[in-house]
Image (cartoon, rainbow, N blue to C red; front, side):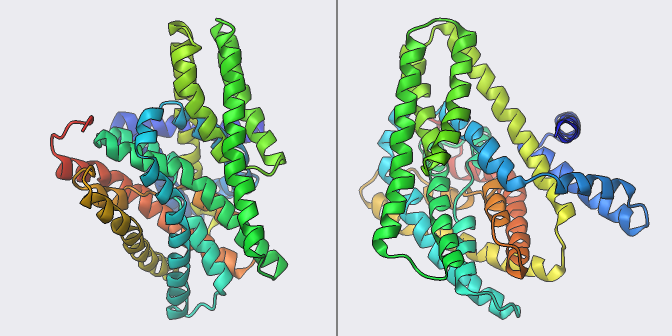
Length: 415
C-alpha cells in the first residue's frame, strides 16, 4: 500500500503542477484531464507494442479497491471538509428546496432514468433487466459533492444558487446510497421487501445518520469549547470524521449524512463559539489541504480508471444517448417544483438552467457501479457510468463558469 500511495501521490503532484503551470483548468478537472490523456497515451503506446508501462500501472490500479477507497476512506473526509464551510443559516433558508431535491428528486430521477436506460439498452441490442436499470438510475442520479464543491465556488455563482447546488449534493448522495442498497438487496434476495421494511431502512440509514452526526458534532463541539490548543483540536476533528464514519457504518447508519451534519455543527457552532482565532485558522487550513489533496488524488484515479475498462464505440453511443436523457430528466425534476416556487418569488434568475447544468456526476457514481455483482451487466453499466462521469466533469464542469457569467452577469453573490 505504501508503494501504491507513493506512486499516486507523486503522479498527482506532477499532474497538479503541470495543470497549474501550463493549462490553468480548475485543479480537480485539470488533473483528471491530464490523467485521462496519460491513460490514452499509454493505450496508444501499447497498441504500438510498447506495453510495459501500461501493464505496470494497470497492475497497480487493479490492486486498488476504488469503491472501498472512496466510500470507506476518502468520502468521509471530503464531505466533512465541504460541510465545514457551509453557512447553516443559508442552508436553513433553502431547506425545502434542498430537501426536495435530495430526497424526492433522487427517487423520481432513479425511476425515470431507470425506465429510460431500459429503453436505450433495448434499442442498442442489450437485454438488461429492470432491476439493473433501476440500480443504474440510483447510482447516476445523485450529484457528486466532490465534483460540485470546488467548481461551483470557483464559478462565481450567486450565493443562493451555490448554496442550493452544494447543499443538494452534500445530502443526496446519502439518500442515493440508501436507494442503491435497497435495490441491491432486492437483486440479491430475488424478492421485493415490503413498504414498511423499505421505510424503516430509510429512517434507520438517513434519519439515524442525521441524529448520529448531530450527536457526534455536539460532543466534539463541547470538547473543543473546553480547551484552547489547536493541535489537539485539529486532532479531535480528524478523529470525529474517521472514527465517526467507521462507527456509523458498523451501526448501519448513513456515514455520509452523519459527516455532513457533524461538519455543519463544527463549522458553525464550533467555529463561532469553541475556537480561538488561531485554532480557527489552523482548523481551516488543515481541512482545506485535506480537501485539495484528496480531491486531486481522487480525480487522478478516475482518469486512470480508463486503463481498466474494455472500451467500444457502441458504449460511447449509449453513454451519449443516456447523458442527453439524464440532462432532460434533471431539467424536468428541477423545473417543475422550481417553477411553482418561482410563482411566489424569491428564485434567482437562471436557477433552473444552472441547477440542471451544475448537477455534476463524479466518483460516487463510479464507486457504486463498482459495487455491482460481477457479470456482463456490471461491465456494461460501469462503462456507461464512466463515460457519463467524464462528460459531466469535463464538459459541464468546464463550462459552468461561462454559463454563470452569461446568466448572472455582474449580479452580486449576496443576491
